[in-house]
Amino acid sequence: RSVYRSLIFNDSLYSATEHGLMKIDAANPFLSNFEFWTRDESFPLGGETGPINQLTIHKNKLYVNYRNDSEGNNDIVYRKDSFAWIPIIDNRTILRLKGNTVEKLLVVTLNDVTLKTVNGSTTHGFYTYQGVYHKPQDAVVGVDSTIYIPNLAFGVILDEWESSQHVLINGPYRDLAWKSSMYYNHLWIAGGKVTGTFGKEFNGNGIYHYINGDWTNINKNNSDVIDENKFNDVIAVANDENNPDVAYAGSYGEGLIEIRGDTVSKIWNHNNM
Image (cartoon, rainbow, N blue to C red; front, side, top):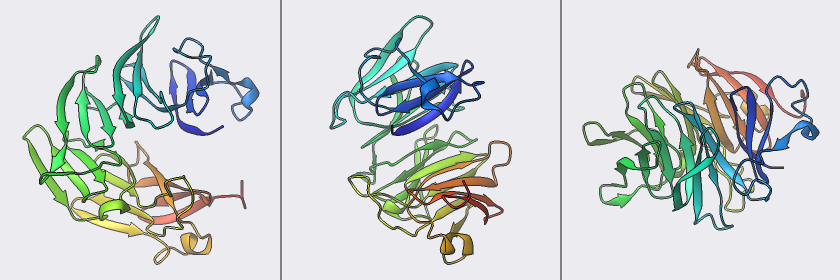
């Protein structure tokens, strides 16, 4: 089964999968054995096989995105309350859902980035830059409440939404900015991508790290680990909340690397797992 996202909520590990919302006791010693997982039947259409492609925690509530049709044009975002799942957003193509420190739910679609209340009302929206739809790939909120938006049209845009300012920063250009992670103003970006049918691109752009106005690009040209293991198509990245200078990057089919001080320190792949 394809697993799109996982998180721990109220002592259960939830996973967004192509066959619904799955869960298991987080203390279960057999997490890797799918036989111990159950589908969350409390979810609307819980017995169906429709995909859940996003989930996040916001204000101590679980939010998920249900892909309601094969084209992804009619997604529905649900909030889990005490006894029911409440639909709060529909008829959109949802790329990302994220809880954050600005007390609003961060929602990324094909064309815009919005901040929403727990009931789905929009309190802020960023739709175009210089009159052009920026086509966001992801978004993340910094400690100063600025929204960092990797996008296909320009690269990375800062949405300083409290002052209505938008700034294009130097760095990954256009479709080199795929996904992002940020803690304490350490912004990490996965620079790879996949084909429209989720096939390999053999993209060698690697990983980008932004801090204090400076970018570092980590790729096969400056890392023997990446070069020797043909670590390409980097489509996921996450940095350590307690040590934001440490990041983990995942590639499509080539494993996972650990980065410390902008140097690749470890790799996990089919050779050592």
